[in-house]
Length: 440
Ligand code: GDP
Ligand code: MG
Image (cartoon, rainbow, N blue to C red; front, side):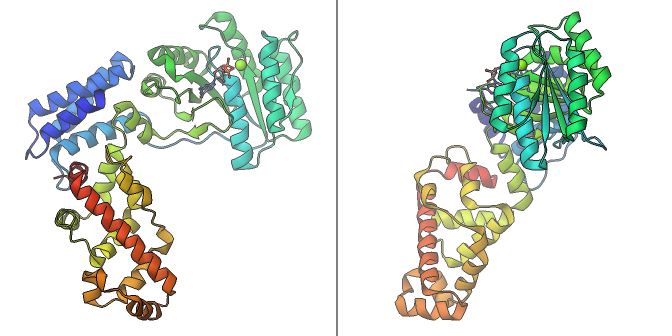
């Protein structure tokens, strides 16, 4: 697969002191393929590669990263930057109601997303939304919205299929003012492709409703087509944001990159399933990882770079190799965990480690870390280095010394042993992953 190809290239670069133009070219060839395979628009790919190549050539290799990681990081940074760097929240009107208009092709997920948004707003903003059924061309569309309304206990304003949707929206807004709904979500009709009649109708609705948010809903499975359609809608309606649906499928999400670079408008949410709670805030960095198809390797690099003391990490790796992991290391590990999040989570990000059975038993609650430390500090240096010394009377002494219960001390020692087992497993099985993480 592609990510293996990339990994191969990256590992072939590992250990070189400086990136040559050739090296960058090799990596970029793979990145280019990755993007095209993710169905990113060709022009977008071209300009992206150019930009990254320039940056990579000029860049100094950071001390904390290998040259290969450095290239991955640059690629990832630029990809994230291209998609907007940070999650952009929904616009909100200064006075209620905030009006959200859903637009997009038929089947993109407008009606479903209207429901998801209502649920999201109710849960996060205690919203009292109203739906307006503006898709009058298919009776089933109104029924669909009503079913969603019933599920969420959200009222639906509709006038069946006979009225002009602009009139329906007008009366719907009047009702929202009267009932003091704080959000109005207007569902609109779509077509299988952009046509003039549809755009005219949407423009008239926009003019009347003056929405705070015009969300273009795009089916991520349609890849490059989605970008073309987005450009068309943006040109006509000046959309304010994008929702990318059906990312639960096997699409790599190249549409996100294309739509963003073609329209310049932020992707605000992603849909990851048919159910109403399957809506998530869009995170450019996560999407970049997905598009590159490198799992969470990039997250790992970021974390490693930010939080890991290289020297300490290498010492730890050595200990693991030598199987001499003791309570002093345990304390170091606790410090690392406090800095960078739970160890089991970190480990799971290493390719090939996610299903390692050794991880199944490891469960370290960050809240308890200071207690765990107190316990270790109450041990003698000999006890720290040789946990086998810890008989019941020593455990009682440690408990009273640290102000924790004997049960807690026992539990902690058990946890330590699990940690030790995991380290043994790793030194037998998967040092490759650890080496990668440590940049060896
Ligand atoms: P509309 O024509 O734009 O209003 O699209 P609908 O909301 O009716 O959705 C079309 C189909 O796509 C329906 O079967 C939805 O259940 C499905 N759908 C919408 N969003 C998602 C999503 O994020 N994931 C999946 N798997 N299906 C979705
Ligand atoms: Mg619909």
